[in-house]
Image 1 (cartoon, rainbow, N blue to C red):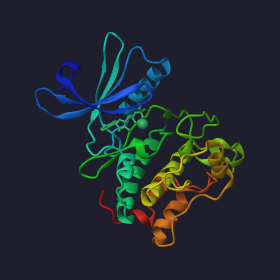
Image 2 (tube, helix red, strand yellow):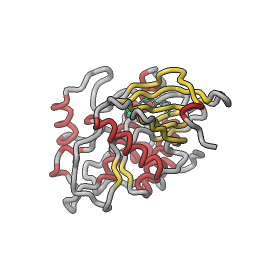
Image 3 (cartoon, protein in one colour):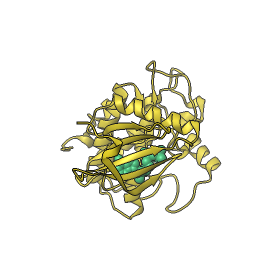
Image 4 (cartoon, rainbow, N blue to C red):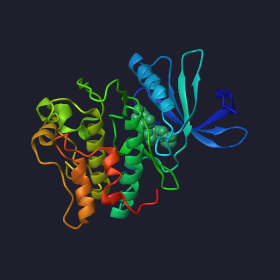
Length: 276
Ligand code: ADP
Ligand code: MG
C-alpha cells in the first residue's frame, strides 16, 4: 500500500535547507514516523530543479546505505515533497557538535557503510558531490545512510570533463578548484571527488573538528582553498593504527588518479572484520 499526503501529519521541523524544510511526520493510522522534505511552490526555480533531481536519483537507488524514499507527493499548488525513512539520531554533524567521541572502531563501522553506499551510487553512475557530516544520517541501530542528493549528478560517461561548481567548498577535492591537479590523463574523475570528501569526513569524526582548521575556527575561504590545493593533505595523529592511517591516505591522495575507488576501499584492511 502506498502512503498518500492525506495519511500523514507534521510533528516537528528537523532541518532547514536550501529552499526546503525537512519535517518529522507521523502516519495517522499506524503511528509510524517518517521524514518529509518539502520544497514549496513559491521557492526558487533552482530549488525546484534540485528536488526533482533528488527524486530521480532516489528512484534509481536501492541500498541499505542510502536513505530510503517511500513516496513523492506533488500538490496541485506546486509543493513537492519526498517521504523518507526517519533517521532518529540525526546527522553525523549533529553528533560531532554534541561532543560525541568516535573511536577508531566506530569510524571504521561508519566508513564501511558510507563506502558501501558510494560503491552503490558510483556503480549506478551517480556522483553525490556533497559528501559531508551533515548529509550522512544515523539511526538508533547505528546505521549510517547517505542523504541529500540536491547537487548530485547522473553521469553520461565514466569520465566527465566538465567541472561545475557545486557542493560545499570545504569538502571539495583539490582538482575541483585547480585543473592542474586533474588526474594523470588530464580528465576530471567526478567519482574520485566523493572519495576525497569521505576522507575528510572520517578525519573530522576522529578529530572532532574540520581537519584543515583548529577546533572552532571559522574558515577564511580563500586561504582554505589555497591550503587544499597547494598544501599537504591533512593526516591522522601518530597514535592510530597503520590500517586507519593508510585508509585515510588512500582517500586523501591529491592526485585523483591515485585515489582509491569505493570498490577498492571495500577491500582495504581497515574495513575487514566489520559486520555492517
Ligand atoms: P538540504 O539540501 O536542505 O541540506 P537535507 O536533505 O540535507 O537537505 O536535509 C536537511 C536536514 O534535515 C539534514 O541535515 C538533517 O538534519 C535533516 N534530515 C533530512 N533528512 C532526514 C531524515 N530522513 N531523517 C532525519 N533527519 C533528516
Ligand atoms: Mg544537506
